[in-house]
Length: 111
Length: 112
Figure 1 (tube, rainbow over the protein chains, first blue to last red):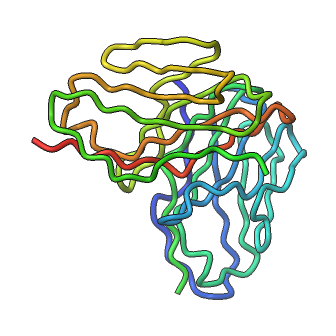
Figure 2: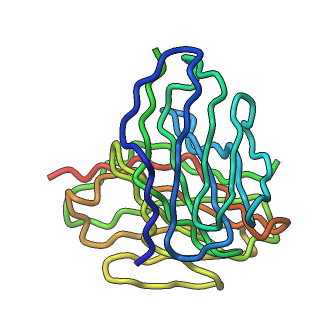
């Protein structure tokens, strides 16, 4: 079974803090993704990576950065958290042109 | 902008009946199509994938694909209360080997 894990299920941070969200997959997938999901807005792609050290912007990259130093690990970084980044963050991984498998999600609250 | 359209619902279906969920997509080159189920507060989980025109059955679930009409559907037979969830339609983007475009989901409610 594919397993995608995320470092935290719930996180509370203060405005201006630097926030790291980490995602690990165990299926040797080339592709990894970060989404955020907000009520009424569906899944929105923040960044994705199709190989180690490679990254591409998604639909809403502003205020975020990513890092992929190893194939199994993809990190999302909020350089200076703001209240409008309060959301559910979902990591996913996949092989090319194939199904994406999601982690359990991190619910982030920025105060 | 490539899009995947779903009726947001809620779709209310009596227990034991057939629930029919529909999805249209704009990218004619899309090759792979998926249905995910998402319970409230949880992450999406894959329930069906379909790659060629026609029907694909898996237990109580049947996915239907019509590429000419750019239409995908999911039928759930003998609906159970545990089927109450949001169902996301997802379609691969032809120009990208990586990206999937998700619909905003249809909320399904099974009433006893």
